[in-house]
Image (tube, rainbow, N blue to C red; front, side, top):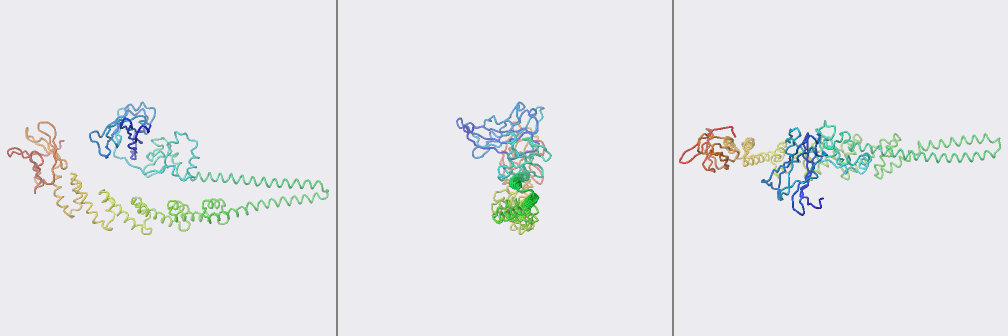
Length: 561
């Protein structure tokens, strides 16, 4: 199908809301190569309720051009899927195209509301969240991936298609193998209906346990076959010996019969002793030597496997720990720190493994810091507490993150980080300058309440006190004012930020004008950007509009809109 279309945008939904009855799983914005039509194709899922309960689903589609500018004349575009209860499946939308304006090159899609067959509705809340990215099942180590395939070979394709990710249990919810987050008290996934207990059979720990059982089963079968073969060989040898002895005995005279019986008894006893000697002394010694050679040649997995199979023979149990330790050191020296941490954790009480774990975490944190991945570095340095210079590195990383936020003009986030740094480096200076910049930004945007809060927090910095006085005046004039004159001026005046909206006395609608901070007077404001100037006295809390021939109209406060 996609040969006919050019994909303008692959729509990936990474924000979710618990208890939502409908979700948008994914979609594509397509360009018909022949007709140049713009078509939107989405996949929606019904979650936790019956299809018969859903009447319609309405979407908010914000349309953008190729410069990612909102097309305000058509946005948001509301599209509704009707009669959803007629669908045969809990998934719908994939077989239908939504036509859009030919200027559209990007979209932002969300659910506006869901109407149920009993006429009730559901509207999304503002409690959406983005879960952490999950690891694909295909990213498992080859041995674990093969074990996963063995464990699930009996599943149907309809079930297997949901098995995409390694499930995760987080503090307040769990992530299904299909990628859907679910409340902790949910016993099954709201998207694919897979039971939670079944989902977490895909974890690395469970797969490793099953892999160990599988390897042990193979080892036992091989050992059983080897013993059976050895016994067959010994039995064949004994049988041949007996046959030879029998032929010899028949040829000997009767007076040698007792002697031959004693000889046979000696031979049988000797064979038994040899077998016992081989099984309990010689074979374990051979295997111990093999394991030692594997360890010396850095074939750690074989060494661990053989030492573990020897049980309490010599110091095999200690050698299992030593082999794991050397394996972890090898990972560490080759900068494979994740595997080093995992292997050291198996033997955390052996030698200095616990310290090595912290060293590996420290190195990973330094890598993240070098790659400018400050959030990940902060998380790891925080885990290390007083290890080495982790506290100093934590402060430095937070300082770098704050400067990155400043570079990205994310002033609120920069302030949040800087407030945790105390007097580190130039943090005390930066936090004042950043609060000043953010306050001025709010001031310019007309968010006077936020601007005043920040300027008051740094009232002694630069000219903040001047802006505080101005913001007292601006906040005082905000809201609605009215007058009762039947024919003059605007009946209602509404101040919103730097904008003035006026309702005509003759009922012909509203006018809107802007004003600037050039309007300040010693006692308030004189706004001359409108048809008739407005004068606001902040001390007396009065608003007057100057009209024709020196006439003026006095306005009063009102809560009406």
